[in-house]
Length: 434
Ligand SMILES: *Cc1c(COP(=O)(O)O)cnc(C)c1O
Image (cartoon, rainbow, N blue to C red; front, side, top):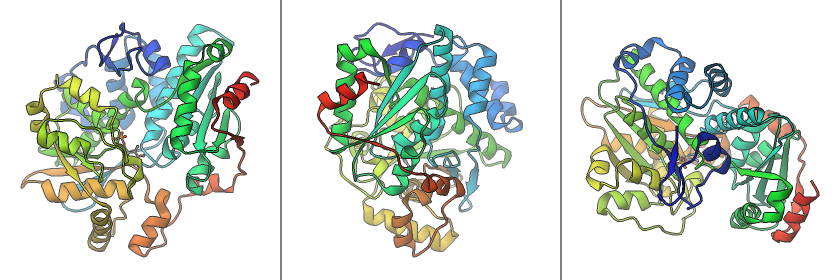
């Protein structure tokens, strides 16, 4: 399969190049040149298949030309070592719980898949080909990537994070791992970390010294596998007899997650329509209303993993529908919620159903409450476990929610990190001596 850039100014790439490079030369996002429709028989029998079987069928449509069947199957099964169940919250609203992976957020799926696919390509190239992944994080991405790549041979990960700006729960998920994961505590803010990573990719001397790659969320190997759990959600809802008029609601920030659902839809997944739920960062919402896309500086909110003022994957959605606003609005509607409304939703949902929403999932739940029509059944993504935001959640709900065992394990470990200034010369010097 060839991958083209959404900016159309870069040469087409192989899957390997798209995965190793991440972003195209013209700064566009890679798109597969064909999105194969899956046969009717697959959907007719999907409810009888396991999550892993479904995922492999979907993975084969994307990656089957480029990865041998046995290897691809192993990558898929290893990635999905945990479930993504659909759980009832009300009669007609279900939560697609994406937080049962190692770092309790949906990014585990893409990060684990990418780590294994990258390793597959390295092995093909031969021994001794160490690759170094650089990732800047404000919290969640670093933990998913570090854990996804933990112990994967031939790959070393450097996680750059802003000193004192990451919650202790988040920090321990990438500073206590050791092995092939190095945490770098930068004396600066997230943007400084991002700038160091970008400068490293541009530096010729450094690139001659070591093979560098990125694992950010625009990578095709991180975003395409997210479609697996939408197919599985449909299968589980179909088994309940509730899939005839299914509405999928995705709390969105950079729009990678909803984009993978839309790819599923293009492959024939029978979802009636989609809702993109935003916090106060309402750029996409405004695009739906006006047809105009105006990036804004991001606003800090309670649902901070969705604080994005210029969602990267908008380019993919735009490309998928050839920029046709009418098609996009006929399939996707929007919603935007301020912190106050997110709080109220968490409280109302807890009082009415006992279900504990995290602030991101709350946006999704609220949008379904407001927008579901008679006869429709809604599924929203619970994108992270509420315990990841324990302090906020407990304060809002007056609870003392339990921290899952696997999160507690991280908290027991000892922190190991390297202190770094925000000066690129220091970072470069450090890497040159690695
Ligand atoms: C990353 C993230 C999101 C946003 O997902 P996008 O793919 O960027 O739209 C939502 N919720 C949580 C908990 C996240 O970590």
